[in-house]
Length: 388
Image 1 (cartoon, rainbow, N blue to C red):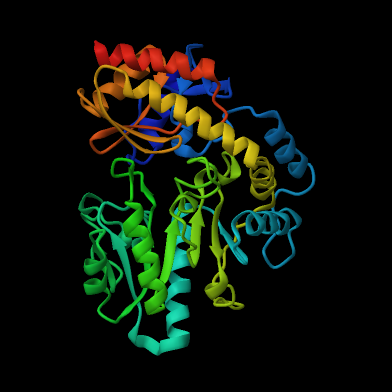
Image 2 (cartoon, rainbow, N blue to C red):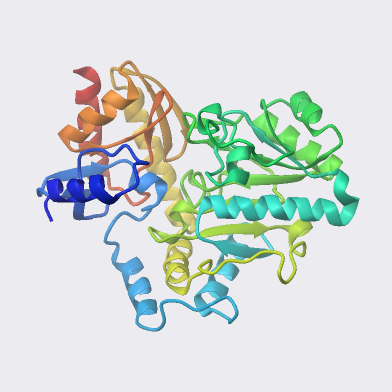
């Protein structure tokens, strides 16, 4: 189907919730995509940190197709072999004790917030149910996760929000004031992606972890975007020398299939019981088979390569005229540029490079498997756009 036909159908029948770039893709390999017109594009976005092994990865496809040839779905009323294997893999990689599977990052965060409130209810009764998040955070688009999202732009139209969810600045005194003796959890993204790819200060995060431990407030790390090898560690919180009580992740975990995971550590492993939470599609066997392949391959050698690629890309980016600042961590990169980010993204697309934006910055989230040749081709396009 030609692009104009796709656009016509989308315009007529699709909900008007997305501002789309003027392209549709019909295939590709690794970090090189092919548009419907046959034009090639270097992918510096990986479907917003989802296609972390690029497109058409043979090992991943084999795992997914192998499961499709068995059974595509089984209810969580029954045992699911790929789901059980993935639970084990995630716990062994992270030090978590148990895992609950949903379909998205928002669902993973919903599970985390519910778990935090039940943990506190079981120990302290109804008086401690407040959840604290940070300004400029993003945790999802359901009402609970939207309540925790610390950006006013996402709140318009949708009040009233879930009560006792408070946004505050990244400062221990501010956290303590917001807690007011009533907090059950604090949720953070070690790297805030949607608001400009900004890494939290390491001193603050360590102080926060100590504060939460002292007050028996659960620390939740939202690793939906920054997890799964994106920063050169399995989870970004590993750069901060802390151990959270709950970790949520999604996006890249299944390599392109919808899957979210909520990981429970020592304090929280036994909080949820039968009937406390559930999901029809969560832990789907096909998605879990794909995720098993991804997680197995995110080993130390692979993550070492990711770190090397990130260092190479960041060094090159810092030398491009028109780049004022490089932020983020690993292959989660924000660029403060002379040109407006949206303008940069459109011009890059025209020249054959896919980049993202996040508020006042260009955002780069390339596949972790991107090659040096693909990086160099993308850098050349970006340099040309910024120097134009």
